[in-house]
Image (cartoon, rainbow, N blue to C red; front, side, top):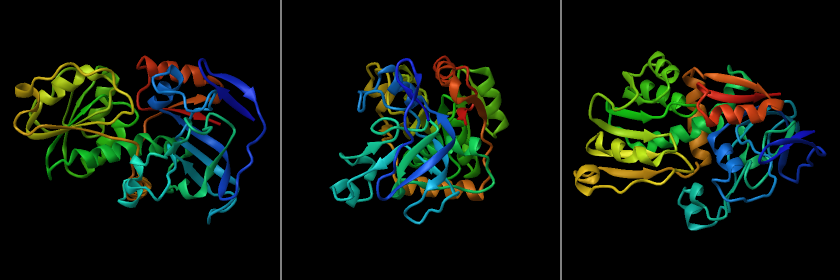
Length: 319
């Protein structure tokens, strides 16, 4: 089995993992490269498991089945892999806030490997009609973007701003367009601006949106974008920060940035209900998934390209 250790990633041969009762063993077909993987590898997030195998956007074929799945079935392994089910957050439907939550590629080995295991209760059934490479980014980038849109509470026919236009944003934009929102994208990348316009965005610029916004989602992990994003909101607007990590936010002016009932919200992981809703949407609305493929042996290159903005759409490791 080819897997990886961190900083920098290096290949190691380890035994194929043995699934515990209630777990699936899957042969990895594709694994998306997420900015969260960068935060794990670069040390932006605290170490949960030393030398963990990264990767939490895993599409695999079931080798050892459990929990109603069958051998040969294609399944997804996502970021969330365990919650307690009994705390006050789990009981009120907010399992993403469970203090005992565990995550693929952070607390347990992930999909930068030939095989992976996952609790059957957290494995995801996948929509048909997509390649494994196209499915992989849906499993975190897509789900988190979907949750961010829910948190943004865009009014019917409203104007939505999107800051940064990578793997997550280009999927969220398509959901927003399908729902009838007017989408305005802000990104430094000319290629990403072209992609945004091709996917139905009303505008794509390198600096500020051309109209006041009802809601906005910040996908870029750049805290200095928070003040201008708040200034671009109309009265009563909501800014959602979608990343697991953000650089420091500058001092805000109450009058310029928050008055007139503007608000800031964060996104923390997702629930399994979010995943099911989003993947159901993907089954009924065919999304265009922009994929930049890499071999597993090119994982360091994929992370480097993502780090410096050379990826348009989503980077995916292909078995």
